[in-house]
Amino acid sequence: MIVAFSVAPSGTGRADGSVHDAVAAAVKIVRESGLPNRTSSMFTEIEGEWDEVFDFVKRATDAVGAFGSRVSLVLKADIRPGHVGELDGKLERLEAALGESS
Image 1: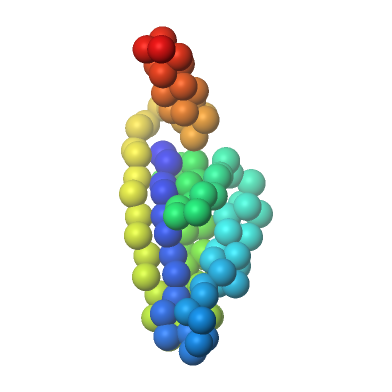
Image 2 (image 1 turned 180 degrees about the vertical axis):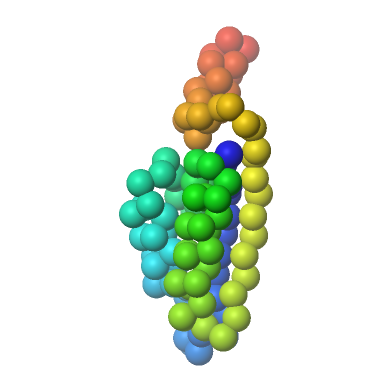
């Protein structure tokens, strides 16, 4: 499965409203997981089996919780049993389709 998630604190007390330190703490946990992952400006994606993926989503969420009084978590999951390597595979198929339509 692939899970795309975004996690951020609120109630941080920072005048500028920035959450980059908290997000960095979450991304560090995901990167240290050893699971395939990718981070963009809006989401972090992680691929693996259900229990391992959600374990790291929980750890990342807990890490962000240390930065504020409240945490917002947004999740989207692509659950496709028997398929691995889809973090890159989906993009490769998209790029191939775009190349064919040119």
